[in-house]
Image 1 (cartoon, rainbow, N blue to C red):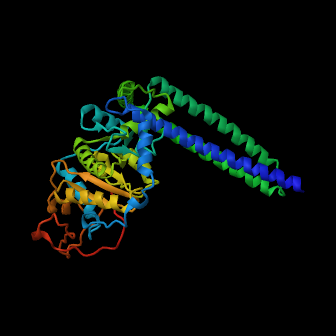
Image 2: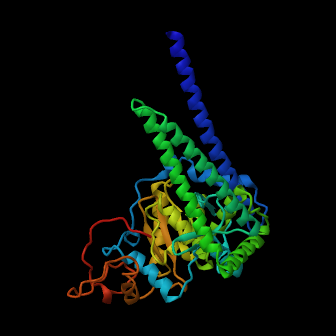
Length: 427
């Protein structure tokens, strides 16, 4: 009996160790990929890979007595009484300046090549990119149109994709027939076995349906000669970029390379936003001798949709701010009260000057949006953008109201908006 218990204990311990080892290996491998991206995106292409790791350690280290007390959020970083006004402000700026958003990684790559976006180093003396591209996968690149992704291939890869679908479909058909044959031989008493077989059959039928949908998508996308030529052209453009991006070459047939390239592409901003980031980071670093942790930069709408599954703050409107390259997030979870207070005061100053929109989010981020020409859009344009920001249409018998103002706004427009229910703001 004791021997059996000991063997069971050893088995459980070995299983736990194996699970821990797999998780650790996965995290280490991802960390190495990210550090490789850090070197590739460095302005000088000479930053050592461990510079990023040292910067992150500095961000996360214990502040001890220097942490200070609790941080007091200034009014400029709090929610408006009209809960859609924050997002509507950014939508108004985007519409007013006709700012182009990027739909997918190909759009983003083209904007980087044209100079609309600039690559941001993963680590400098004053800031470090920490958490960029955490949800970037190693799947093939794709076009994103009408909320639907179309995988990009060259001619050889397209043939291979069809071949893999056909082979897997044939294998599934055979497996389903075998399982049905097994189920037919069972007696009425074999209910548990029949139930288990039926679960396996259902799972394989679902996979079969998914394969058919994949084939239909390929047929629809590549069946038309003109569309097929455009998709092949898109792939060739991406391949040309991948051969020399940031001084490094990426193999689009290699899943690891695809993932790192996506992380590199996500490490981009418009010059106007980068200027704000560098100004805030310089002030923070000068005060505390720490790099400012930046957790999000540009996010194509395709990536935004994927992120929405795990981050409820990832807004899904026609013009999400992060997809413009004008927005970035600062991670404050490791900061003490003194650091947060200083940083929020800096952000509040920039908002009073009319250069940014900003809010303190509950998920430990400051969301910062840079205005193109350093001037906040007028209130009438913001009010006109409320519906685009997700606000319900105003009732015709209600007079139009305006949000509670920050100190930066004029006294002539201080009409108070009715207080709405407390809900977390989307960005």
